[in-house]
Length: 158
Length: 264
Image 1 (spheres, chains in turn yellow, brown):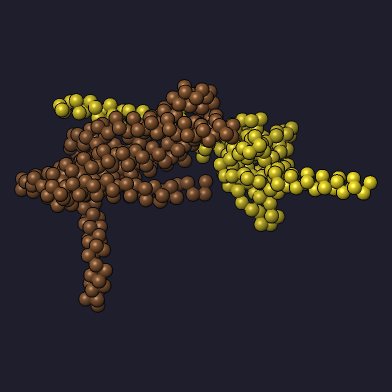
Image 2: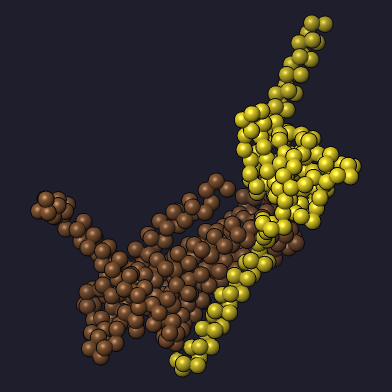
């Protein structure tokens, strides 16, 4: 094969390969982790985080506004301390509340933020005052069963 | 002390010492290859010819296999997902399995059997016909002239081929999922985009394929260079290239996956 033809085919091959990588990067995936520069960190303490994982989304009104960056246990008070990287574009008032929600019945868990009405905003490093923990399905079921059992025993006494 | 050291190793038997000697030679070969690599980039035309030989000629088998694997993934995945009413997640299943694992791994296995064996046979026959010795006689270093361009041609081709494999697989999954099984195309693409992460999934897949490219190309040129200059020697070296490459790819895959996806 002529030298020019080899160059042509190799050029086409490299272009197709780079196009394939670009397709994977732009069409198939999304850069869900926000760039490090444009974020600020907030923390929230939860009594129980259920199945929350690092990199889980933080949503407000369903819009992704940040990501969970780390989860650890506060050994002073034995609560889970969740650190979040929030998008700089979105600020929340100081009395906003954070809760752990589940998308669907068996879906992934995420942090939902309900905005408050205070004029002062949460700044870098501040903590959510109001939080509510994840709903743990086992606890719900056991509570339901116990209340049923109590109902049953009170009925037989009558 | 020295006698006891040698007696200990010769006591282990010929297969063991033979393997050690070969490993040592391969390491020395790799270092010499790296030292002569600048020539492959100064005279880039040589490398371009090898990209054509290893990469362009492998496109057809990579594209067709990718398409079929994507189609099979979609058919099998749909069968399972539809039981849980989660058939809209088919795009995620197809894209994640291709981008993370099947693209780099199956791509590298095909590359080893299509291009790696050809490189080994070519170098082995050059050695058998004493072309390499003739080059040395003319003060042309075969390392810089023959080995390095083939190695770098393979290393450059592999990630591009793996990416093409993944893209063709996703296209195959789209054909089966959307056109044949009637899933919603918007759901298929948006769920895929929402779940597949650029850094954790796509970049790790590309990194994997670079490692596989280095491994397969090194094994191919080394086995060719190391082949006994006889017809049986060359055929044995070609077989060893494919077998060793397959084992090394799968072993490396375990190690790389453990590094990349542990704890996420």
